[in-house]
Structures are given as C-alpha cells and as structure tokens.
Image (cartoon, rainbow, N blue to C red; front, side, top):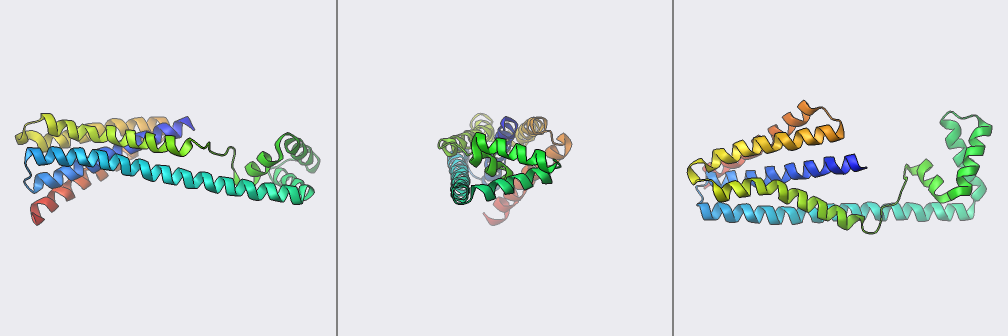
Length: 218
C-alpha cells in the first residue's frame, strides 16, 4: 500500500510539472509578458492542484461508498443464509487447491473469527474498507504532490530572465520528470527506462503542442 501511495505521489507531481509547463509554453508562444507568465503559472499551480485533489477525493469517496455497499450486501446474505455463505467460502478455498476437508476447516475458522471480512476477501478481494478520513487524505496528498511538481516551472518563471525562460523551463522539466519518473519506477518496481520515456514523451509533447498553438493562434 505504501509503495502504491509513493508511486502515486510521483505521478501526481509529474502531472503538475507537465500541465503547468505546457500552459507556460503556450503563453510563451503567444508572446506573453513576464508578469502574465507568472500569473498564469501561479494560477495553473493552484487551480490544477485543487482540481486534481478534488478529483482524487471524489474518486476515493466513491470507492469507499462502493465498499460499504458491498459490505452491507454481504452482511445481509450472512444473516439470511449463514450455511450457504459458509459453503461458498469452502468452495472458494477448495478452488484455491485445498482438500475439501481442509477447505471446510479453514472456512469455518475464518468465519468464526470474522465472517464478514472472510466473505469480502474471498468474493471481492476486499481486505479492508477505507477509513472515513481516507478520501480527504487522498485529496490533500494529490493536491500537494501536484503543486510541488508545478512549483518547478513557477519558480523558473519567477527567477529566470525572459530571454532564457523558455529553454530553462524545458531543461528543468526534463530533469524534474527524469527524477520523479525514476523514483516512481524504483518504488513501484516498474521499468525505469519505459517510465522515463513515457513521461518525457508526454511532457515534451505537451509543451511542444502548447507552444505551437500559442504561435499559430495568437
């Protein structure tokens, strides 16, 4: 679980870097002033972070509601037909390779300990229902990760001279995406090269398209 959360943080930070840098390149292509670029970068960081956090909160809240609905359904089935549910659990463990007698013994012991948890795990792969605070924490973590990533192009916009700003953002995005992609790959045990190539392709592609749009349409 911790590994998945850390991977998610790195990916959310990547999103912040790409979205904000892409917006800045579009404004730069349109010939925006330093002040407008800084305003756009700051607005993208705040609005993007809040939007990403809100979406994650809604997604996690919906996931928890689904888990609770499944738990209520299983609890009702246990109350209505405990023997039938025990038979289903026995069949599950038998299907996993246990002998019929051992499967029955395991099912009975798990049912005695926590019948609902045993059914949720066997039938739905649900080991634990999300805590009430989980959606809020997920939203806050996503928003912060996005804003931390977005802060990279924002800070460059603030400190770099306009003459080198565009290239400085490109270089910084490449470095930042490389670092976060390698972290995500290491934590999640993915292919570092594939993760890096995907992140750079999306990041550089987004910036390139945004810059051309600024040049062509403004």
